[in-house]
Image 1 (tube, rainbow, N blue to C red):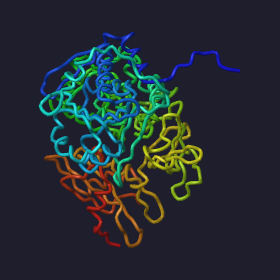
Image 2 (cartoon, helix red, strand yellow; image 1 turned 30 degrees about the vertical axis):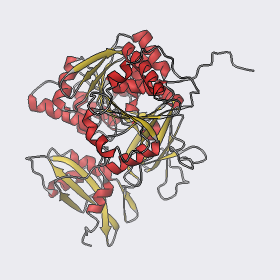
Image 3 (cartoon, rainbow, N blue to C red; image 1 turned 60 degrees about the vertical axis):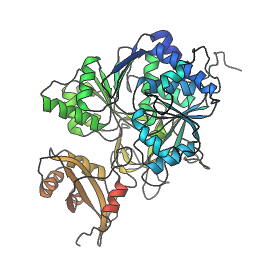
Image 4 (cartoon, one colour; image 1 turned 90 degrees about the vertical axis):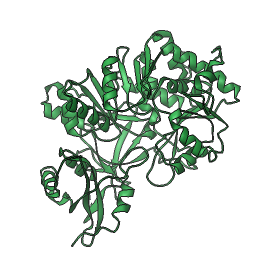
Length: 532
């Protein structure tokens, strides 16, 4: 017996059609690096995306072809999300912060045919052009000095076009992970996976977006699906506010000017906003919702934001999970909990969304599934319809026979299903046969007001094989000693977890995406020796 419902392919073009039809006049605002501002709306985004479809087709670019962008957050970049995918192509968002060898590898591995870029990245384009052997066309988002300007390029078209049709399982976006070892790996998103992720993201326990939302996504558009906002905001007609600068002063001004009530950014964004508010004596901007992810939000920041009346959504995910897999929403008894207990819930990575399953397995015996007891830390695995099955061009699946994907995280699951990340499998420290969480040591250290950044790594020890040391960057003009930090940590972690040494440095190495590079830090301290 066949079903009796209409059969629609779930393709992302449906989102922009809906946004233009039902919320066409809702604004999309861009604050540019030169201080100027431009305004469009969802109808304008759709119109320009259809023009882009025509412009791509005129260049012979169509179904399955990769359309690359090298750009920050702005409305023209948003147009490419719907223009490239609407032409049947695959949008490849390139991270401009990657190193040249990585930029070389991913553009050629993706076989990008066209690159659309910000003028600010012209030096990168000039440097890499001869190495990018597959790119045939260049378009500049905001200038015509070295390539056709985007507005002129699509402006030659009339927009009288249709979206290219196809299966919902067609690929639509490509994003490369920035691993600290080996080449980056490509994650190829489908129309279907993005649409299912969008439905999940719109739940009140997740992004909780509606037409009243005025959203400032500080997370870059070249990061994993921009945390889903270009799709989800279109689905409900939310206002989007983009800013080319992440400077706290600019963000605060824009939040007030555009009545932004929802901000999404990594913990460092929230830290800089709070530091700016404190330094200037201003009141907190009128934000009611805050989404954070990318790394664990320090408890002190969560306390501060919640005390200001801001509802925190602490999410976990990765490029391979499209990206949101879990989020710290309010459980049924949340309102009856003390403030401290509420902060504890928000400081964790939350519970799996419907559509995602989690489990942890023993670090030494991956065949052993661990209990959800809040005590047994193991390797975190995940599966679901918006979780990767195979990396782009890989010759084998990234999952096992039951489609479990190994995230590379170390975590424990509480009896209520709450996820608590404790480390990365490559960064966890094994001392005398027991595991020590580098993340917990780091989180405890950065709670000190004089600590700007901290990283814990394992170094060789003649008796215990490995022991932790803490590498610390002090805040400018502030002082703290190793003894003070060890005293602070002694109040928060087990005695045998305490680092054997604290080393102060001017800076800690980072990856191209801004994360601490434990690999480079371990290389830096590879000859470091502890006394027995």
